Length: 121
Image 1 (cartoon, helix red, strand yellow):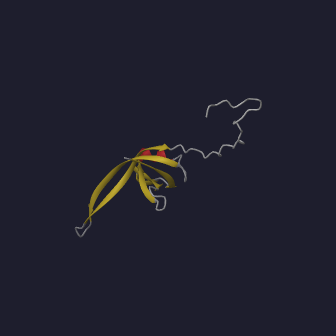
Image 2 (cartoon, rainbow, N blue to C red; image 1 turned 90 degrees about the horizontal axis):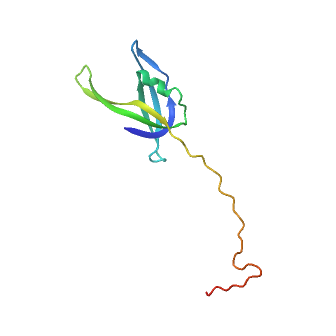
Image 3 (cartoon, rainbow, N blue to C red; image 1 turned 90 degrees about the vertical axis):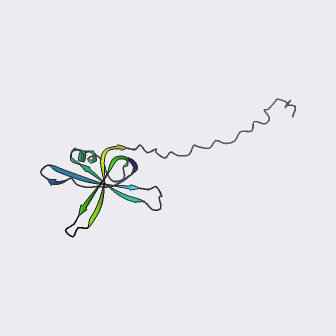
C-alpha cells in the first residue's frame, strides 16, 4: 500500500530490546484539506534509517504494510491493534510556483500601413 502526504513529525529511534528498534513517522494526509489526517507509521529494525533524511514539511510517498494482531488482557477481553509498517519512502518532487508570464501589449494587425485590405469578407 502507499500514500502521499507531508511529513509532520519524525520520532527518535527507540531501542525496545537488545535486538529490536523502531521509529515513528507522522504524515499529514490531506485528502480533504479542510480536515487533514495525521497518520502514524512505524519503521522497524534497519528501516529506521529511511527516516534519517526526512524533516517536517517534506512531501513524501510512503510504502507500507498493514499489520493487525489480537491481544487478550488478564480478564480475557480481546482487543485488536493495527500497525502501518514502512518498507520504502520516496521524496515527492513539488512543482515550484512560477510567476505569471509578462503581458505583451496588443498589436493592431488589422491594417498594415500602405496595403489595401483586399479580403472578400
